[in-house]
Length: 519
Image (cartoon, rainbow, N blue to C red; front, side, top):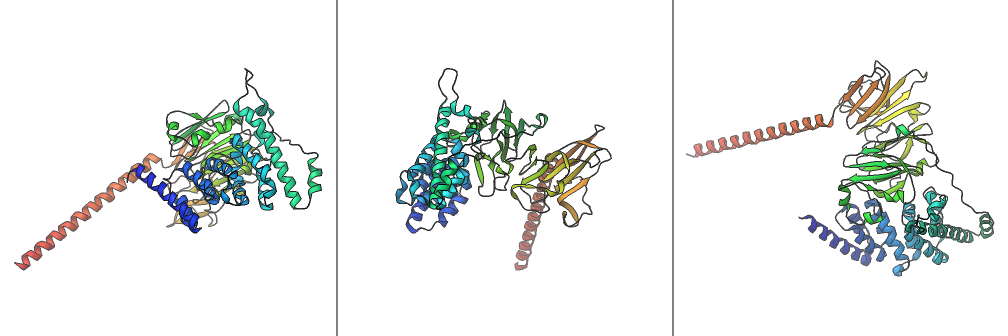
């Protein structure tokens, strides 16, 4: 079936399921369709769900398809209409924490949201108010670029004309604070502590400390390539380009228009630059991207294996999401693998993402949706970290300070750990198949005859450079594996053809014998 036909049929199916859901109140068929079908029109479906009062289905759409910006915009528009539904039901969904970045990226929509909250606040339940108190908290790091930066609210251009976003963010700041205070007052009224909150707000002021940057200039990655997309950093701005199959957007207009434009030339990720968020380093995974900024670590792209580090509630995010696990921490190293990542913060090694081969170093094969400390390296001085397709290398300073020690963990199917396939390792630290050492679930030491000063790995091969400038390599290159797989496919095809030919000859012989016997 042609792609256009699939698209039209999927849209018709979506409309049919929406109508059926409104009639019989059975949400499961619609939810299954949203979670499994990728052919229907996202923007159209988002608007239909919001206008139909199917708010929980709209939330599911945002989480599975990454269309958080569109869903937020349409849900805010639905507040004024309500469509006969309980406003608490709408606000309970709209006050989800995943919309916090949307609030800062879409100031005009957010201002309307704040106005609607203040207008209808007397109708909100205590549960909705508690969620709003978290979502609208101006002390959150998500809002720090606006709240703590007067220049973004008051800046004017050289000709005296204010930039559109600058003037909007001035109103955004005031509306956010007013909505937050109104929510707190109403919440404490319902809890019977009105005097307490009123006294506390007498001295209410916001003071954000500037986020410290620990990444050395020589370790900042300003150009990175993934499997089908790339990113570079120029003067604090991130530019991205590549295949439209990679889930990402650069601004609101881009996210609702043709994504093919990114194939032609690099485009600025204006979600960050509009907020004057300065990017210092960027890393590409296979289908995700990390941005280390003056406001912390941001991630966007696929999250089906937890590689964004924002939790497991979203399958993907088209816009940068703040990785809040590192709030207040001093990141000094950041590395992205294919589907897993590593960062050194406050001297501790954190890993997250895909972990089925033990490449996260936690002694298990579980994925990690949030950054988690690798306990093995607690107390060790980490010099370098490098991540491959499903394995990890960590170079540490020896306790005596007289040299470095290389630790390896993860997949060893192609020898990429460099320890061979016959390793006597503790069961807790390793997993073996057919008496062959195929993966290590925890770090093990790899020794060379000389001191290692540099490490690097990609896909299934690893490299190390010693003090004597000798280059060591181990594992298998993707090209070699491709040739091996092609040879195996040809061999299987040849065997299949020979078997078919032999069967045909045997059948012909049997038919000939049967004919001779009848004669």
